[in-house]
Image 1 (cartoon, rainbow, N blue to C red):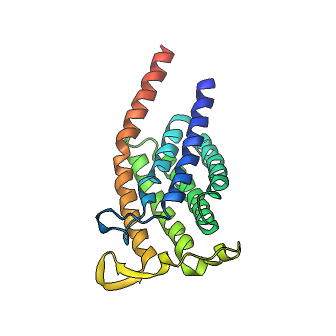
Image 2: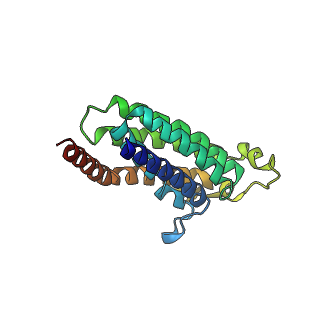
Image 3: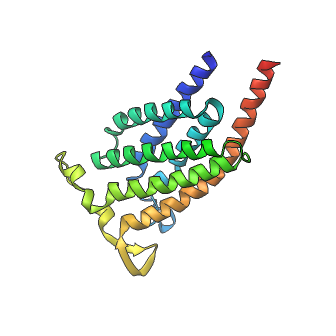
Length: 213
């Protein structure tokens, strides 16, 4: 009982810290290799949230996973006030909650399938929804009022035109390329997360078997 409670507390804190870090890092273009018009740093951290959700779902069930998401969401929104603009905090909260609940639903439906199918497919679908909602709200000019209503000036940089996917001949708002670039990275990181997912699940199952012996 104590171990389960400690595990859920750890998962909740990990979830909140991941979202806060991503909310902060998504404000910074990924400048190395000249990819500042294609990526933000947040793409590399956010997939960890799906790893936390899937591990919690696998270990403690969908009900506990939803509790971790809701509490982590509340903590992340509060902490994000200090590291992100209101528009990013609101967009992140909306996208996070919707995408994580979708992830939990899909994972639960695929729970009895091969070990990699549930985490991979649920993360892919969750990342798709999260990217669509987050970038649409966080950087599209139509949602600038989320900042101006709080007395802040909306950041024009993401909406400025830039080469679409680094193609000089095609110009589009920078955030559209960010969304596509971040989405691709999220999918690749989600694929890479299968390794720690498998390792942690094997370790957890081994511990449970030893405790039951």
